Length: 318
Ligand code: 1HN
Image: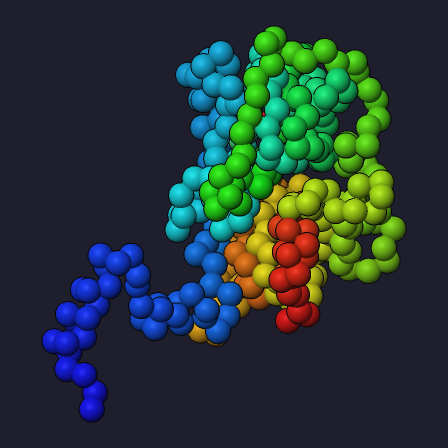
């Protein structure tokens, strides 16, 4: 005989004081038939964000903001989530300012958007930044940023912060001085100049090319995050892609759109222009389309190293 609902309600009530809960009411949500990221596809429009960054530079003194950053927060999530697993922010520094030295367990990568005369000093190496460069901040290495010359410098930060919501072991140490002692270096194994990246992409005789950033050993950029650059020629598109890592994309240059095929069969279209940033949540089937007259170049970072080391990475040519 099936139990009456009154009995069931009483039964469920009796569980709470014993700190137990029924699995059968939540099991399908915990073990769904497909990956269920909470993030939604989103574009951050640089034309709208740049004036806000400039305003933050006017209103928020460097001394009051260890890092002057506008975080790119997914509308379906909370800080620090740009996607479920990735954090991105736009950092702004003015001439003469210093973002003081600290180090932390989280890994950071930076993609330089605009400006000249800015540097990041990482564990003693002062590295000047130019548009399109990728510069790494490995875990627990001292880093401070500074700006010489005229005008501001703006870059995209990518960090593995969302993971530390689930595993709250990230922490920071502050150096006793603004700057950790550093020497200027022209080249570094943690700097990937844009010129070399574009040369790799342009050496591929195809309308679409991809370049995987790696450390000298061939390993991904970090144990959690790594990055790619892609070229899509005018009027062309990438293949469809579907992966259970998520992606934060930044448009180095070009105009186009990303088509995301939703589970209900409908398409979400994210339109982008040079310097815009957008995200693709995990397991979304997507392709990049160049809608402009010139080649489009895009940078992106993702959490595939984390998923691969956990042996749960999935990718399919969708
Ligand atoms: C950080 O250290 C930087 O060093 C940027 O530039 C953004 C976001 C959260 C935590 C640490 C930086 C950050 C950050």
